[in-house]
Length: 205
Ligand code: DAO
Ligand code: DAO
Image 1: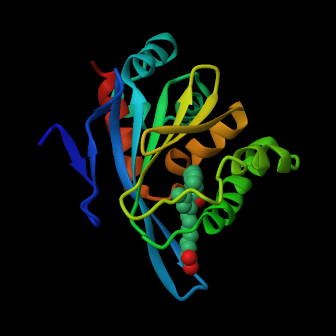
Image 2 (image 1 turned 30 degrees about the horizontal axis):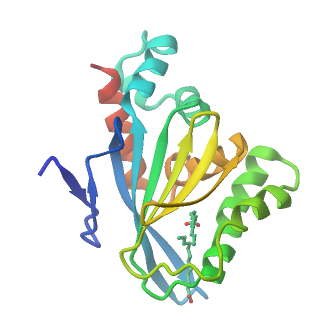
């Protein structure tokens, strides 16, 4: 139905909208290879963005481009990831045996790489300020929901099962996390393609 969209491999479903105006623009799967031996489906994810914010950005700077041109425009994508747009990446845990230590390690690798890419220098402190939010006592069994939301002013806010666990204000961190899902080397290419299609069609209206 139009009320939710299922990630095809896992069947995990994502509501079409969350909050007041964040709309689902893509779904995908985060996999991880362990010791090069097997591929684990770690979590399904949904990418949400505030439609009004997206339309505003397009209207202000890209109104001369057709939807098809917008879709492949790298400058636009960069701006979209840097703009102060309300966005949420919703994760639904698939792999039921995740412990917080492996979450922290994976995070240091994936997000750490992006911090280096966009920030240049060593960003250990920034990384620590975020991984410090992941307390050992948290449990994230299969089907747990984790929301990573970019709030106004580039504040990254984390909620587990709807409970706020912490926030970090950092444009670089927000940018780095968005890049994992909609940057040029995303976790799931199909999710990024869907996202681009949906943004382009939003812009056309
Ligand atoms: O436990 O052997 C193992 C494999 C763990 C894979 C860890 C992947 C963690 C990915 C980040 C999850 C963020 C919620
Ligand atoms: O998949 O490598 C990745 C990046 C995951 C980013 C999200 C991690 C946030 C996890 C919070 C868990 C708190 C226990």
